[in-house]
Image (cartoon, rainbow, N blue to C red; front, side, top):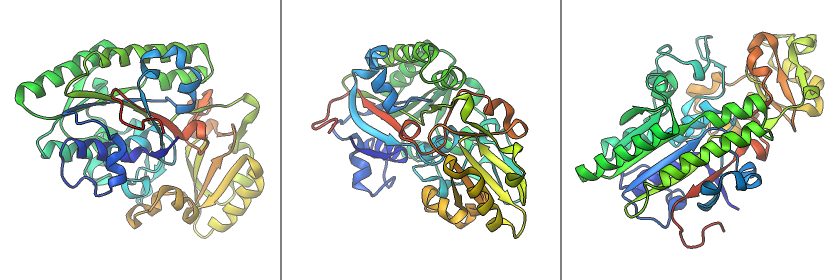
Length: 377
């Protein structure tokens, strides 16, 4: 099964809709081969992994019954704010600068994109144009459908600005909003791109775990949303479903308290990120010593990399954004988590975690309502 970057999806979608110059990469363009739809609905289900969808196919018959176009790979770190910005811009994290759940800006301030308001300025922080902006400028009707509270968030304005925004809280509200967007586009004789975001599955996985009954119930609710959207498709409209990441369950015995080790604090100015990926910012001149100490202390529980080494996962990295990356980055291995009561007590206590490089976290599904030749190969 092929695995292409999540960042390829919207360039392929906008090119299909006739938007010029969004990509010159034919490999990207053929990601959605097999349809000539004039209206595309892209549903992103937060927290849905390709491997786990396969395991729970019976819980989600509508979604599982869609054509399998293979898997996409979430960017690194495999976390919502990074993935949504790569989705929205078509760029790797090193080129859009959103490099983690929390990270340091070049002025020393801390940015946590999931709670981002108006400061720092979202467009100055992430100035690259989004695919939604490009599509709207080219005459495509663009509509984003997500919780009303997200409309003016910094993350929305940085990652997914462009077009109209329809606030919708329930699955039924989202289906209605999508139906309205399709009706409006057809009436106006315009092609359309409708982006729909659903966060509830991710919450269930974080709190109850990805192998829990609560997660399976939440996946069943996802399937109801998919079924409702599929009823709108056919003829000139098609549905694409994907995700931003999945997660792993972290047992209590695999939670390493990074505050409990003096070696992990020596020479360190700030620790940010999240339990599966920690950005470690060293005191001036201490980066080499910090790297050695973290490597020795964590052993096989984490892959500890220098800024230059982790750039290969984020990259290419624009020089403008390089200082946002920790001097040292610790990537949890297997089902370990690097927790902290001081840095992020609530997040550190969650059962389901993500951000690292395991297939369970990185591989996300790509399903479509049409059947191209050779699908699933």
